[in-house]
Every structure is written in structure tokens, then in C-alpha cells.
Image: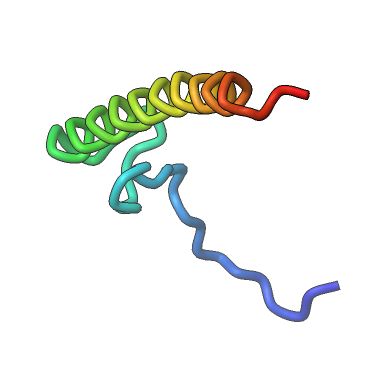
Length: 70
């Protein structure tokens, strides 16, 4: 049981996924700048994932082909 009641309530809100600023609950970003930055980050992550998905199997095949045969 609490001794003190907190009367103040924080209004419903979320935080911008890029900069962490408090924003209304129905928005994802605080502004266009953060939305553009987020879209660039997502694009870069997708590109990096595709590169890894291509490089690792290629490296495996190269090592498999260059391994000494018995």
C-alpha cells in the first residue's frame, strides 16, 4: 500500500523511434527529418542484409571448390 498518491498523470504519448522525443500516440516520428533518416537507415539495413546473404554462400562455395581433394 502506497503512502502517497501521485495526482499528476502523464498524457498518452510515444517516443520518436529516431531521436526519442515525446510525440502524440498516433504518430511514429516527430518530423519529416526523422522520418527520412529512419527510411535511410531501413534501406541501408536491407542492403547490408542482401550483401551478407550473397557473400557468405559465395565464400562457402569458393572454399569448397578450393579445398584439397582426397
